Length: 273
Image 1 (spheres, rainbow, N blue to C red):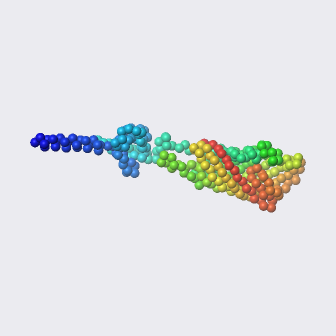
Image 2 (image 1 turned 90 degrees about the vertical axis):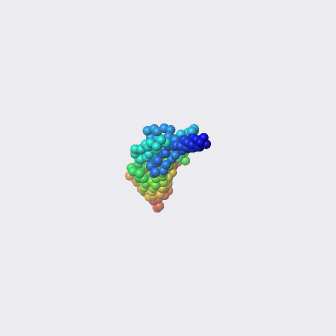
Image 3 (image 1 turned 90 degrees about the horizontal axis):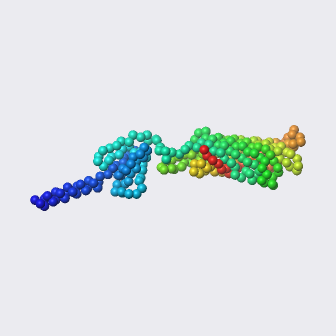
């Protein structure tokens, strides 16, 4: 009889231990996968937990929009009513649809060029450039003063960024093709005489823009197209003629009257906002 009582209490004790060992919370995810855990805290946006059997260390967490139900160790359940498309604040990426950039090498060629880029829609951006010709850093070029205007539509093959399991497509990042029109006007001193230049052009640029930290942009590009140049001496502005020599026109290279091809390119750096 005593042996039977001992066996009974032993089995009872083992069943209690087994139940304690097996007792655990279950997180049922939105895709019906389940995690056996110990729930520690539920916040506005997240569920913090440790895996079953781990009593110390850093807490793990899962966004509530990825969970549809919690089954506690005592059998009770909690249904999570949450918008699957909501993103908690720490996962949100601020949309930046504009950029201001400067051409880093332009000052070495006696001009300054500034660009403004604006997202029209995903994959299509407007870019406008303006420049001042007149710096005298490079003494090998003739003294010149004038301005540059460029405008084009940038068609991007956007690149995506992975951040904490989320895929984000940046509207400024990726390789692109940009049809562009340009105009510049400047007066250059050649052999002591002022000569006025008007340059017109249309080209297609190919480039790639990188985004660093969602704030800094690096833009590399080059292009080819057709141009037209008029020049005249300052003392007789009516005596205009079409340019017929290879020349550096600050916004592009012009191959002249016989081969009216232009080449353009640059490396720009700027701030995305």
